[in-house]
Amino acid sequence: MSRSESDARLARAGTTAQPARAGTTAQPARAVTILTRVGCHLCETAEAEVARICGELGVPWAATDVDSDVELRAEYGDRVPVILIDGKEHGFWRVEEKRFRASLAG
Image (cartoon, rainbow, N blue to C red; front, side, top):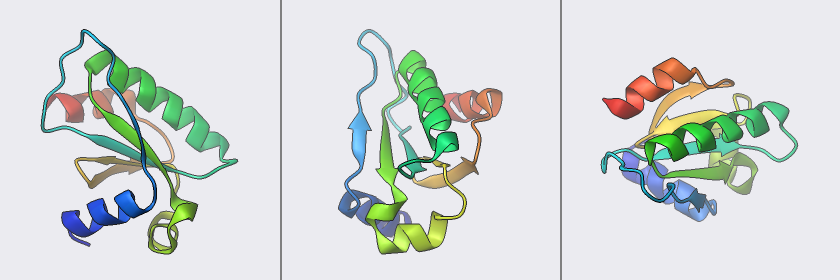
């Protein structure tokens, strides 16, 4: 799937964007999306970690429910949560904080 196809799919799925905290500086090229599902405990934990880390770094992020789009559910449904950085898969199931921060910094 191309990045534009992925971006369009996420837009159709009703991604909810979370603003960066005021007073922080972000690398403009970085954007994080976390693919989640309602009732998923791992998703709730990962979303809280992404919110905290992105907030500290001033990186915008958004959450998308994979069940809101048939194609997202087919592609990612058994691996949620999935973390995307700039539309590319970074990891799934758990946030590896050191690796996540390094990817956002570089």
